[in-house]
Length: 542
Ligand code: HEM
Ligand SMILES: [Cu+2]
Image (cartoon, rainbow, N blue to C red):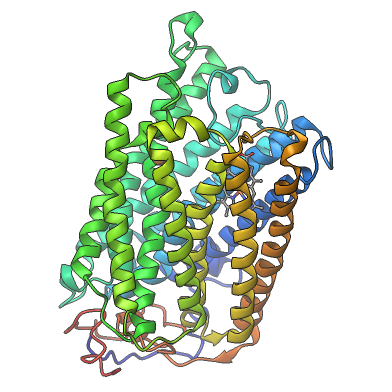
């Protein structure tokens, strides 16, 4: 990309250029970077709350029988853990925080296409989050259905499922509007020379994600609206006694929620695709293959929802077709993994924290993906369905995949946004502790699941005690790593050494503007792009 000459009005970039005084500089800002930071801090907050709930679940499961809470509280805690982690952390995580912070700069835009809509999406996110929290203390008390809200239980329980459904409905709108904004931004606001084949892979992944957000999210909106109607006016759509069908709820739920796992993972893949070339000092191997596989995942991933329902009662033919389609989606995912490894191969590797977090993404996501194939194979799934094997699998993919990618993005881009660097040694130590704790925690879950321990149960038979205790100890190690990582990031943001515009030697546009970037990203003139995002030689870095 061409060198950009910027006229930053001050050293503190957009932090000093608020339109309004005080807190309103944030609450009324339409700048994509400020909105990105609003999301970032809210998402970190909810992640910490969710993680504490996860630790409480593990504490309860340390020994058979009651350990720290009763059964009804336990049901509420794991429902809340699931709802927070899914709807408030992992789905909005990378797109809403880092997509907003970085994507417009990567394509040479001064902001997203609809800045006010962008701010409105954040308010919807906050409103949804507030309602979800309110549902704990009002009505019949905290929802106890699990984050899947399966009928008939969710239609009948006296807990506050109705308000939680409204919360999910509103959060869905936030997600759809962000998707619309990003699609329009990528189509309309690319600067001169930013052809489709020069778009950085992070932005490409957000583009593919945005289409899923637009096309799939309305389905969950309709599903929770129907659940609300079922509870409030007894529509009977899902109630067999009134001619309804509970299986229909599962179809509707997973028609969104399976594509949603690609809303969760694709942006993470995009982060990794951007980081690996920079820290290998090599162009990304198979750029086009990564682009096409993102789009292929977005498309094919919409056809496999019923692999969550092999044991719900379906025709053998349907089971066969969904099992086959599920295996097809593994292909574009595997293509990406091969391309990342080929990029690393014979590169001059810089083992800085962003790369370490990206490497743990590859390892943990691959393990998670392969156990996904075990679940995709219908015959094997019948054995491990709704056991801890599933819990192990999805934590590997979501936490080991997207979670690690979120942390990788944090270590990669926060110095750009705040203009300060964290301590790299502490970041590395925290990373090592986290990965060790992670493996102990979730491998134990997979094994105890293979042995038949069901998920979502308050209690277990004594035979499973050993592995459960191992898992709980793993969760403590993981927690130590998390605390160390966040403490180091906070310290870095406030007290770290100032950084240059391009601390890692990246070739894409965000590394050409000052750290932190000025309000409209670029000075008087828009940048003109003359080479691809990983052409380190043409960018003068190699
Ligand atoms: C400190 C880290 C974490 C710990 C100790 C932890 C632990 C647990 C445990 C013990 C369960 C209960 C499993 C069950 O009974 O079904 C669970 C469920 C779940 N976790 Fe986590 N988890 C952690 C992080 C995460 C993250 C980062 C995510 C999302 C990205 C996540 C998403 C979920 C979901 C969706 C469920 C399912 C809830 C349900 O079945 O309704 N967890 N977790
Ligand atoms: Cu699925």
